[in-house]
Structures are given as structure tokens and as C-alpha cells.
Length: 426
Image 1 (spheres, helix red, strand yellow):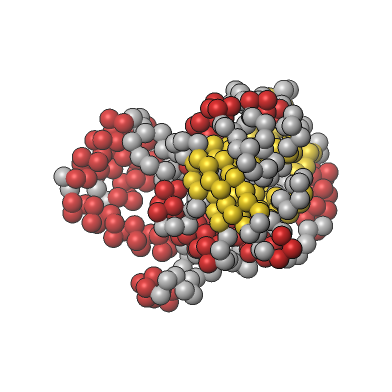
Image 2 (tube, helix red, strand yellow; image 1 turned 90 degrees about the vertical axis):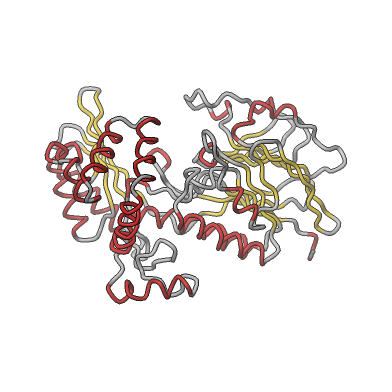
């Protein structure tokens, strides 16, 4: 290894498969941020890519999440970059199922995986070596049981949970840094979505690089990964800002003119090459309609991607999104919508009941109904394929060639595909 340089890239909380606010553009943002972490690992020629949990957003991720994960990790494998992953709570099924991370491991894309037991492995890099320990979210209470190797002075802990020292009001932040044994050179944490650096009593940095995209207003705004040099006796940490993250604009207003002025200034200050921003406005003593009209105009002019309004009145807080669901909900006939979608009265009634009463018993009843109605299943599958193509906004020419594209390994996909970068995704 040239100059005996030993670099690792610490990533966490990529949440592949998430679709914040139900927007396809936000799903693309999540995937693009993950791709950027892969590009950084390749550019910096790291030896180890470590992911500190919540790789996926759900233990049942959509197909595109698997594909994007596969493609990214495959690039690392081809570059001989080892991959270590610990499972976060979003990666772990609650019952009777296995984590989707096992599939990536079985494909040979994850070199060390920690889910249902504390994992450890030694990675050799010429004269240097690293002993890596992994603790998943479900085993955080066992962290003090780790027997840290004394044979290696480059011991790394990767774990996914909230530390008490973060000082956040959460019952889940129930493990202290003091519970972590001495002997680690670097402590790579995940679960907390905001970049934070703490210190263990032994002096080791305990680092949360934060999520790779913004999921909630309180996580705004810049996002990072941690590039860590372990060549010397003390780790050198360099936080690299992710460029693909969609910008957010947060303002507070007390009068309509003030809102218009602030928003215009903020939007005009953005780089013309960045994506359209998410806008979060906190208002008081202003009619909501005045602000929504302004923001709707900005969306129509393609200046804003999405907005949320926080209304503060006499200590009460009301949040509204761009869709203003609360205002139009009374006009929605859910039963009629389901009937039009599935084109089967009995099945539509079952689905309507399940949405109103989502119990396991109702889910079992739906599954049994589908088992007894194979023709309906075939009809739904056929209809879903058509809907999927339409939902991705693929034009007629693309629609006719989609089967050919699948055979060619998803080459030349339409601009709206979740599987490709989209320079037009602003």
C-alpha cells in the first residue's frame, strides 16, 4: 500500500427505498446520495467502506433499492474495497423474516455483516491491519461485553444506536459512551441523522456522520460522510459534504410581504445548478391561504419542489404540506378509488376494511382470498405493470422497449427512472 495509507469511509443511514413526503423526486434524492458515497469511496481509494446501519429504509425494500445497492457495492468489490455493514432497526424485520442485508452478503458484496450477533473480523492491509467489531441495533445492550483485542492497536467499533451523550429527549438514547469498552481507535456510530462528534473516556472519537439525505425538517441542512485516516496512531477525520443533497429553505414569517421577500431572496441565492429546494415556512398571524398561494405559484414556475407550512397560533402548531390533505380529505371517496383500481368488488371491500382496520387477521384474510382467486392475481399483476410504467413517466417509445431494456441490464432507461442519475431532476 503506497505510503502505508489506510483510509476508511464511514457512512450511515442511507435509508434506501425511502420516499419522503411520497415524492418520487425525493426517492431519487435518497438513491443519488448513496451513489455519491460510492463515488467518494472510489475517488479517495479507501480500503474499507463501513456502513453504520439503516442501509435500507424498511426490511422489505422496493426492487429498485436492491438494484441500486447491488450496483453500488459491486463497484466497491471490483475496486477491492471491503464492505462492513451493521444492521439498524430499519434493516431488521420485526418477526418471521430475515433482513434484506443477507441477500447482499450472499451475493458476496458485504464482507462483514452484524445483525443477530456481535461480529468481528481482522482486515489485513500490508503491514497494517484493522480489527473491526460490529454491533447491530438489537444488541446495543451487549456492547459492554465486547472483548477488545489487545493484539492490534487499530480496533474499530461500528454500532447503530443513540448515545445518552447526544442529549436528545429520546427514550431510545439509553446507552452511554461509558458502556463501550476501552481499546478502540475509532467508534463509528449510526442512527442519529445529524453530524456529531463525541469523545470516549479513552480519547477515541465517537462519530455520527449523519444521514446521507434530509428526511425531516429538524435534520436540515448539510449532509456528510466521514473519511478517516487510520495510518498514524491517532485517527484523522475529514467530513466530506455531499453535493447531491437537495437544498432546503427554512424561514419564519409574521406578514405576507416579509414571506415573499425572504423566499425570493433565498431562492435567488441558490446555485442555478442545484435541485429545486424543499421549503419549510413557519408562520404566525398570517392567513395560511396567503402563503400557500405564493408557494403554489413558485411550484408552478418550477422554483420549488415541495413545501410545508408550520402554523403557530397561541402555542398550537399545525403543519400542512403542499398537498393540503386536511383540506381536501372530506371529498375523497376511498372505497370508490380502491374499486376503480382493482376492478373487483369483493377484493375492493376487503382492502377497504384492511385500510380501516389493519390487523394481522385482515391481512391473512386478504392473502387467503388471493390464493383462492388466481385469475384476479394475474389480472392485478398485469395491471400493476402498466401502472408502474405510467407512474415512472416513461413515454410510449420507452414503454414499448422496456422489456428489451431489462434484458440489457437496465441500459438507457428513461429520465424518470429511479435507477439512474437524472440531471433534469431539479
